[in-house]
Length: 78
Image (cartoon, rainbow, N blue to C red; front, side):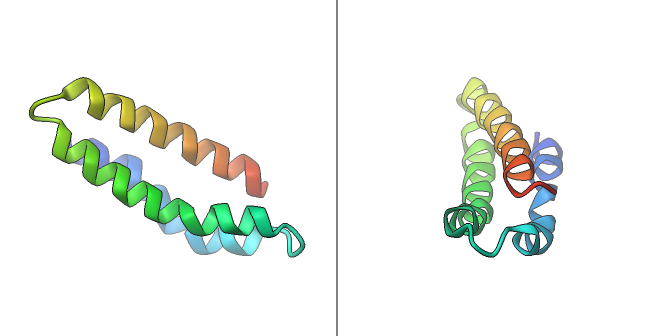
């Protein structure tokens, strides 16, 4: 599970590219891109922490992390 959470968290390293791909006039988009790494780190930590007792919560968090990553790529158009 730890390896899966790390793999799902790897798009965090594309944060600088996402930030540079944001349109200059879209302040809301830039704000969401700035929040994205903190959200991903917190979700990854919570999924890892919840797995021993509540595996279904971990799976839900991982699915939501994947959907959020896809949404961020669509948002910035990268």
